[in-house]
Image 1 (cartoon, protein in one colour):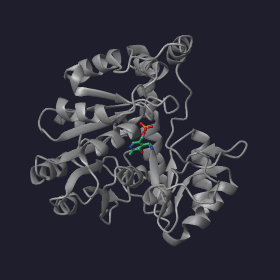
Image 2: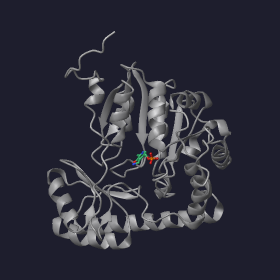
Image 3: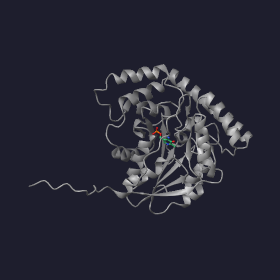
Image 4: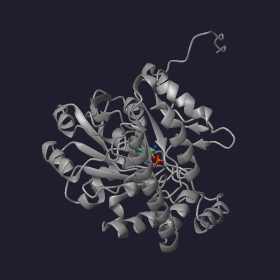
Length: 360
Ligand code: PMP
């Protein structure tokens, strides 16, 4: 058989995938500037974590343990569950995609609030499912009643993000329990708690306290933020075994590296963890001080429970973001809506307050 003539025909891709915008990352910070666009932890790893990562790197000719058993056992002990009730993934964003793929088939619906984490729409589309976005309340928090009311026969997953990225508002425990009572128990609820360790409001929901109480609840956490391991990609989910097994089946095998699990395990050792959580405490205080100072300047900053604050800049978003960039601050702008600024180095807070005072 002769080879076909080359033509200009385009390879047939799934049109909805070809049209997906790529995941956005902030631009690099200018020299002497501050990258406050990805809610990263401003500190480099503590020495024990760096040593553990280096030791694991020396053995990268071997495949990792596909199930990350040692890390799952460690987390299981901490949360009072079995290792089978913990699933480790290559960042919690991978886990979110795995759960959506496990529960939502083409034509099904996934409900989440909007504005929320930018990755949600893409991973719903990849699953072939349909996003149902429920607008946030005027205070920039989830409208859980409206989210529950948006559930239809086709809904398979509801994602609750607390504290919400990018607005910072956390869901309260009371609100969440009412919500769980009003959602059918055969629909999967994903409670995305990427910023849980930064929460200081005692009324906020703590997903890990609710494990075992609901057959349809999965809680997602990450080592990327509080534990400062964004670069190695490791997160985890806690929930009922059957749901986790289904999510395990949708994963690309061996996605979690030995370097990542070694870093995570070292970060959970008591001395390292005490230091890391001390840094989290500093960031939470810095966030509260920054929010108070911005409110005193006249900014309407919503409740901030993550490691970031939300500036509702509306139509002025691009202009304000450019002004921030001019003074060396890279923030995440959502044109027409607002700007999310991560809480970083103390010097960045001074620069921010100086420039934002002029822009209020
Ligand atoms: N959920 C939320 C709400 C986030 O903001 C992020 C990171 N920006 C993630 C999940 C994913 O984090 P990772 O994949 O690094 O664990």
